[in-house]
Image 1 (cartoon, rainbow, N blue to C red):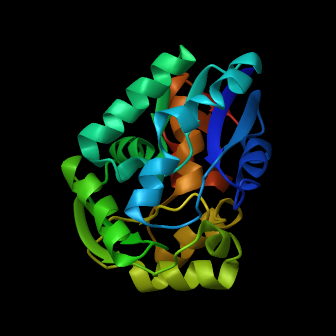
Image 2: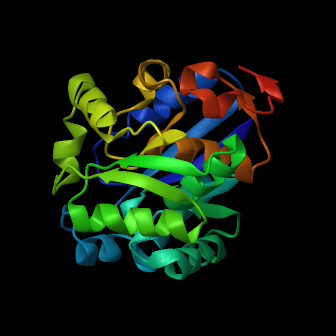
Amino acid sequence: MTALGFLYPGHSAEDDYPRTEQLLGSDIRVELVHTDIGEDAHRVDTLRRMGAPERLAAGVETLRLAGVEAIVWACTSGSFVYGWDGAHEQVRSLALAAGMPASSTSFAFVHALREIGVHRVAVGATYPDDVAELFADFLRAAGTTVTAVRPSGIVTAAEVGDWGERELFDLARRADRPEAQALLLPDTALHTVAHLPALEKELGKPVLTANQVTVWEALRLTDRRVNAPTLGSLFTHEPIIQA
C-alpha cells in the first residue's frame, strides 16, 4: 500500500481525490487534509497568504500520522504566484516541515509535460487575467511555449467548484489552439477527473488538469507508475502497475 498525502485549500473539488483513488484501482491510498484559505479570492495577495508556510505546515502532522510517503500542495495558484524561485522555496519548506518528499500542483504540471514530451500548450484558466498570466509565466520559466491563455475572470474557488460538465467543456473548447500539443486546465477547484477521456477525445490531444496532475505528481514522488487510461493519457506512460 502506498499512501499519498495532499494539502487541499478549502472545499471546492476535493471529491476528485477519492474518485481518483477509485479509478487507480490498485494499492494506492489518498489522504487529504483541508487547509485554511482565509479569504476566497483569486487575487495575488490572497493567494500568497493562502500558500504561506505556516498554513501549509498546519496540516502536515495529520498527514504524517496517516503514514503518507509524500505530500503535494494541491493548489496551482497558491504556488505559481510565488514565481519560479519562490515556488521552489515553498516546496523546500514543505518538505522540511514534513520530513518527506513534497511538491505542488504547479510543478506537477511541469513534470507531467516532460513525462508526455509536450513543449507547446494552451491554457484554459478559470482565473482573472493577471493570475492566468502568472501561470503562463511559470510555464515559460520551465521552458514551455504557451501558445494562448484563455482566462475566465472567476474570482472565487467556490464559484469554480459549482461548474459542471457544460462549463468545463466550454472552457476547454474556447481555450484550445490547433498549434498546442496539449491543453492545460490549472485550477484544483475545478471538477475534471470524471471527464478526462471525453475531454481528450473532444480535443484530440492530451488534456492535463490540476487534480489529475497533482495525484500523478505524488505517485512520481513515491516512484509509482499506474496505468489508468480513465485518468487520461498522462496515466498511460511507462506502466509498472496495471490498474
